Image 1 (cartoon, one colour):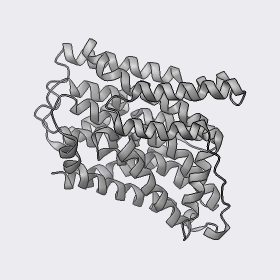
Image 2 (tube, rainbow, N blue to C red):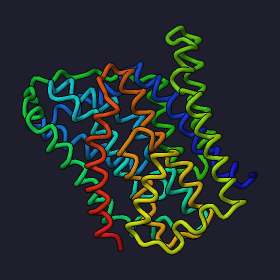
Image 3 (cartoon, helix red, strand yellow):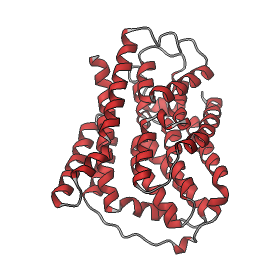
Image 4 (cartoon, rainbow, N blue to C red):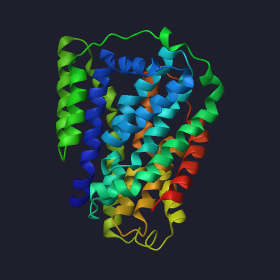
Length: 344
C-alpha cells in the first residue's frame, strides 16, 4: 500500500495545482491572448486549426497531458472565436490531440510514468522508441477532425480581421511560467506547482477578484479524490494478487493495445496503468498506445477528458459525450493502428 501511495499521490496533486493556476490565468485573459495569436496566422480556419493543433501537441509532449488540457483548451476555443470559425473542431481537437500527443516523453502522460516507473528505461530511449508513433498519432488525429469539420472550418474571418488582445500579466501568468519551469527542472514538481496554485488563488481571493467557491470548484476535488482512491485501490490490489499477471504477460501487441484501451474506459487510464504496472507486460510500449489513445473513445477513459468536459462548459462551449465518443473512437482506432504499424 505504501508503494502504491508513493507512485500515485503526486499526479493528482500536480493536476490540482495546474487547475488552480489555470483558473487564475483564465480570469486574467492569458488564454484569450494566446488564442488570438493562433487566430492571426495567415490563412483561413483550416490553417488556424492545424497551427493550434500543433501547438497543443507540443505543449502536451513537453509539459504533459493534463497541463495541455488545462491551458490549451481555452486557447483553442479563443482562437476559434477570434477567427470566427468552427469552434467545435478546435474544442474537440484540443482533447483528442492532447491524448494522442502524450506518447512522446515519459512525462507527457502520467500513465507513462506509472508504467515505466520500475522498468529502468531512460527518457531519451523512451522518446526514441515512441517518436514515430507520436508523429503518426498527431497526424492521424488532425486529419480525422479535419475530415469531420472540413466545411465548417472553411468558413472563417480573414487573419487581418482578428482583434488583437492586449497582454495583461498578473499572478496567474507568472504562476503558469513557474509551473512550466518547475515541471521541466524539478524531478518531483507536484507540491511546488500546487503551492503556486494555492498562493495565486489566495492572493486573488484576498483582493476580491475571485471567490473561494470558484477556487474550490476549479479543482473539482470530488472527482480528483474519487479517482485517486480508485487508482490506489487498484494498484494495491494488483500488487498483492495475480489479477493482472496473466493478462498481458504473453499477449501480442494488438491484444495489449485493445485490453489497455478497454480497461481505461471501464476504470480510467490512471487506475488501469496502476493495474498493469504491478506485473510484467510483454509489450509495454504497445500498452501505452492503449492507455494514451484509448481514452479518446469515451470521457470515462482519462482524467484529462473529465477536466476537458468541465473546462469547456465553464468556457461556454457546447459539448456532447456522445459526439466525443463517435468522433474520438474513430480517431483512437485509426491512430492506434497507424502507431502500432510504426512502433519499433
